[in-house]
Every structure is written in C-alpha cells, then in structure tokens.
Image (cartoon, rainbow, N blue to C red; front, side, top):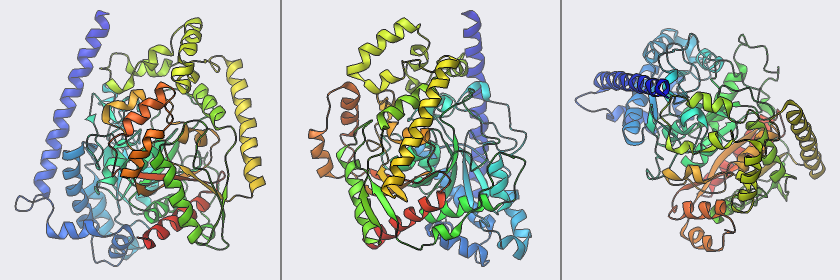
Length: 551
C-alpha cells in the first residue's frame, strides 16, 4: 500500500511538472501569434471563415500561404482550448512543416491537402510528443516516429498542428482525465463532447480545426461527432493503418479499433480519407490493397438506402428518432430509394461486443490505472470485472432488470480461450446473418440513429452504460460508418420525452440526461458493407447537400 501511495505521489508530481511545461509553451506560442495584443486579427478571421474546399482552393492557387493558415488555426485553437480545454499540446514542428511546404512552390501546391491544418488525437503518435491516454505514467515517453496516418497526411501536404484530449485510458463517452483535465462541449459547456476522441470533436465543433484524426473502437469518432455537431467517418477496421496508434494495452479480438476522421463538413472528411489512401504505401504491410474508387462517390445510379429509426439494443430519444426521419426525407429528395430495414440481432451483437471487450476481465485497464489518480468518469467497472465468477453472476442477476445492458458485461463469456472461441464463432454467424439480410433487402447503405441521446451533462457518463450499443454493434460486424449532423433537439422533442420508455435505471438515466438538451446537435449514422467507404461517403455527401438546399 505504501508503495502504491509513493507511486501515486510520483505520478502526480510528473503530471504537475508537465502541465506547467505545456502552459509555458502555450504562453510562448500565444506571444508569437499575438499582433498588437490580438490573436484573431481581421486576416485570420477571414481565413477561418472559409469553407474547407474554399480554403484548399486558395492555398493551391497561392492566394494564401500554409504559414498564414497555420497561424490562423493556431490562434483560433488557443481561443477554443481556453474555453473548452480540448488541446493537450501544440506540435512545435508545425511551423517548420508549413514553411517547408511553401518552399516547394508549385510542386507543393499540387498536393491534395496542401497547407491544410490537421489536429490529432492524443493516442496517435507524433514524433517527439507523448501519447498519454490521459495517464501520468505515459508522460515523458515521447514517440520516436510518426504514426502511419501522420506520415500519409504530411506526404499529401497536410500540417498536423496539435494533439487533443481523451478520457482516461480511453474508456468512456466522457472526456476527462487527471493529467489534462475535462474537455467541455463547445455547444453547451455544461455537457460533454463525447469520447474517446472528445478533444477532436470539441476542437472541430468550435471551429479550431477543419479536420482531425481520431480512433474508433465502439464509437470513438462517431459519438463526439454526434455530440458536437460535426462529421465523422469510421472506415472498415484495417483499411487505414493502425501503426503508431496507442491502444489500451490489451489485445482486442472481435471488436477492432479503426483510425477515423472528423471534419467540419463531409467534403473535407472525404478529401482527407482519399488522400491518405492515395498516399504511397508506408512500412505497414497489413492494410489491404483496396485503392480509393472515386466513381463510387461521384454518382451514378440512385441507391437503395435502408432506414431504421429504432434500436433493439437501446431505444433512441424522440429527437434522435426524428433525425432519421429528417435524413430519410432528404435522401428521398436526392433521388434515392428508401426502404424500412431493421438489422437482425442488434441486442445480441452488443452482448457479443461487450464479451470481446471484457475478455481479459479488465486486467489491462486495471494495470493502466494502477498508481494513477482515478478520474471520476471511470466508475467501478474495473473492479466489477475482477469479481469472482459467483459474485459476477449474482451481480448480473441484480442488474438484469435495472440495467440489462450493463449486465451483459458481467457474463465473462470470453474469459477463457474456449469461451472466446465460442464468442468469435457466434460473431461470425451474426455477421453472416446481417450480411444476408442486407443482401436480401438489396441495400447499398443504411441510415440509423447516431446515438440514443444528444450530449449528456458532464458528470453523467458513468450512468449511461449500454448507450454505446447504438454505435458498437456496427463495430462488431466491422461495417464502415459515417456520422452526419442533420438537426437539433427541439422543444417538441423535449416534451415527447415524457413518453420515453423508462422501465429500468439505464433508460431513466438517459431520459434524465436528455432533459434541457434543447438546441444540441443530433446526427445520424450512415452504414455500408465492409470496404465500401466510398458508397458511405456518397450517401453522406448527398445527405449534407440536400439538407443545405432545404435550408
């Protein structure tokens, strides 16, 4: 016990020292950027007002220089992080990278992402900076090289300029940790930005970045996009390289992480993913040789799009259900055929996903947290997963009626190799079942709720167990998924909450957390078959375009 207390004091001191160092670096950057005591000058405000496509055009035509654009977004990001605490560190090499791009002249301007500032999730390695996962034990261990996604973005002309906050051990739909503090939602600072790429969602949502790199296991880029009113794409796991992306310390079977992208609009997300896929292959031999297929994005025949406004695993609130109707109407107006379709086995899928994610019974999570100051949003899950099987079985019975989705995590079905094999075989059968139903319906894509609710208050994350079922089921079957913001919570949605089913504690917590959410953004998920990211992007583009036309 004394040893643990000593380690905790040592880690707390390391965090305090590093926080002071980062604050000092931020002060120096702010000083360099200030012009007459002003960060957001008239020129920078003009740059910030440009859409991503207009900004890229100005850069390619030489009307703006990469250093000008970088400084505008550094200045805006400083203002944003003072308000919502979304940035862990600014990347000190960014200015040199932008200057080097300028020196390449016309050759540089021919790159698809020339001069585009890009923000990066804490867990994505940038040479010389830590990838902490919000853990003090990971401080002062800078990455020796860039992650593959950073190499690809830089090769295509992008300028990574800052790293963003995550929940402690990247385990929560909240976004706080004792090292970097709590990140707030830019739309309503009394609410959370989502997780695990919550810093990215907050920064992009507040206008401090045009495009950001995140990681999605069961919703890591999609939940922040939905909460903060931005766009996200989770490609099929494996299509983008995971080299240099720090995980949770445990091998994952059945549910695999995917490098994802968040952005201000669909076009910039599509441009970023396309550029990465068209970059020269790096040292990672694992991503499949599936080239970007622009003809699938650029149109052709009308598509057959399924829609599902309910969720067997976790019912959506009225606003999130209505968002699907908004998307359905817009896609119909764009010329696509809309058909009702309910994916089979979503409740079963979430149970399998939880079994896979908890296969080590929380061993890796507890190791990460050992000696650390525990963030309040972690809850008691690490200890509950360590309970002996008889106690877990009793707890499962107690939770079955009160919080049935949380009870799934207590099964321990994959705690042995034999159990894990059985779970993975059941997953294989479920994927085949979903794919067969999809094919039978003749679908090209599917639209469904992005999450059961809008962004909850900051402290509610531990009480919302199971809500990630809405995103997690598509991670289990490994289908590519995008999120597009389509509407906002209305007063009518709030009034209809009175009829929201609340027959167990988990649903009552969702209902309580949604109260007062009027005005918050609401998105939908757009899902495609594996390796069909381009079709997903086409539907996302058509949806966004039609919504803009409708005003």
